[in-house]
Image (tube, rainbow over all chains, first blue to last red):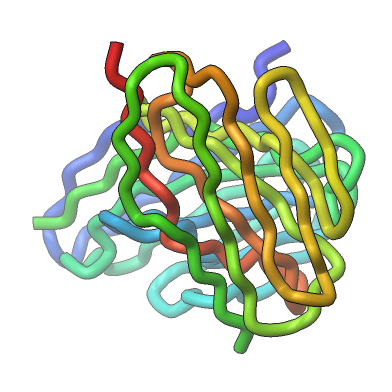
Length: 115
Length: 107
């Protein structure tokens, strides 16, 4: 039972490069989320999805795009990386909107540095 | 938007001590969660606690929704309790997170 798997775990990009972060969950969760965590702060929501084929913007969506072509996968793309996108990125999933019964499950994070 | 404030920002305790972490929020909520992030970065969901009290082993949480605060109690602290504790409230499909309380338990 893998839970939520994020790849890659670490990445260094040059300004202007693009990349895609992959999140995969095997719990049949409907809801998936991408967060970023900056030093000394809590998580901030980038984008989320309430089901296959649907995505929506969160608190800090600028500079990112997402896709959810399959229920188990949620991809986060950076088209033209900027130093301000240096952060730790977490993917999460939940069975329901409020996650009142089973909670949220998080991936182990991706540490991205943009130079 | 809704504001979430946690206190204290840092807490250093000896093993075996008890602690209380506080989370204040600026508006009424129907979902409040507590999370623990261990020193290696892994996040674990501790409690869903929009109101009332819940207990799980040495940890318990109480939310007084009418007064807009929640408390997380850790009893008989162990070194494995070290890390950052976050509370987060649900608003408009989003969890709004506090900045966390960094807890260090010394052996």
